[in-house]
Length: 287
Image (cartoon, rainbow, N blue to C red; front, top):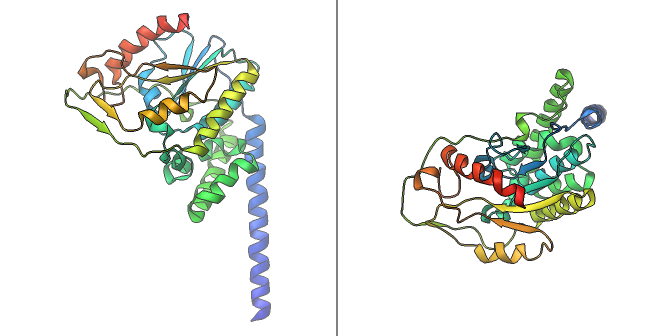
C-alpha cells in the first residue's frame, strides 16, 4: 500500500510538473509574439467598461479606436494599455478611460477575480501578468475556480498559437451598438457600495503612471447619465478624483440628450451614442 501511494504521488507530481511547464511555454510564446498594433492614424483610445463601450462610436470620431468592454476593470485595462504603448508603431496621443461611480466602488475589486472576470479577461491577459499580478488571484479568488479558468486560459492561448492570432481583435473590446431605450422620466436611485476598490484603483494609478512615462495624455471620463439618475457614492468619486493631480476629469454626466437616447440609467443607446460621438468629434480637438 505504501509503495502504491508513493507511485501515485510521483505520478501526480510529474503530471503537474509537465502541465506547468507546458502552460508556461504556451503563455510565454503568446507573450513573445503578441503585437498590439493599431492603425497608424489612431490618436485617441477609449478604454473602460460598457459605459464607454456604448457611448463612443469610433466610426464617428476621427482617428479614434474604442477598446472598452463590458465589466473590464482597471486591472485588465492596465495590461491592454501596456501592450499598446509598448508597441513603437502605435501613434496614440490621448487615452480616455472610464471614471464612473460604478467602477470605483469596493465591488470593482471583484471584477478582477470573480467568475465573469476570470472567464472573460484572464485568458486574454494571462501571458502579460507578473507573479505579483497573479498573486491577487491566489489571495482572493476561489482556488478551484482559479484552476478551472487558468486551464481555460492555457487552452485559449494555445488556440492563438495554432491560429497565429497574436493581434488585437474583438475580444479586446469595441463600440457596442445598444438597441434599446428607457423612455422614462421617473427618478432613478443607483445605490453603490460606499468605499473604494483599492486594488482596482491601484491599477488605474499604474495606467496613469505608464502613460506619463510614455508622454501620453490621460483623461478620466464620465459618460452621459440619464438626467433623473441619482448616485449614492458621488462624494467618493469626487474625493478620489482630487488624488489624481494633473489629470483632467471630463464630466459629461449632464450632457443633454432626450430620454429615448438612453439605453438605461447609465448607458447610451445607439441614438444617444450618435449624438454624443458627433459632438465629441469636435470637442476632442480642443482638449
